[in-house]
Image (cartoon, rainbow, N blue to C red; front, side, top):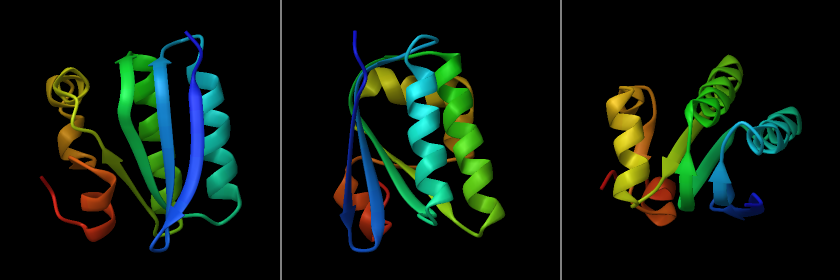
Length: 114
């Protein structure tokens, strides 16, 4: 399945909406886009995973790498997702303590965790 990436701005945040599956085949595309956004000085990122059907450890590695890069420049990466199966991956790996998780992009913009 192809990976969809769409970017927009919302209240000073860059929102990257991801759709499809993020795995070893598609994760490099996500990595490239996230690195490009950070290189452009967009250090307030929200990654919207609501339309993601599957993600593996490669995907998690990409997200952790983006979080580390953003923090170097006092930035932030927030995850927006209401999909129980995707959130479960964050919980199982304990990455729910590394990322701020929100149930919607609107919540992530406001900083209101769901």
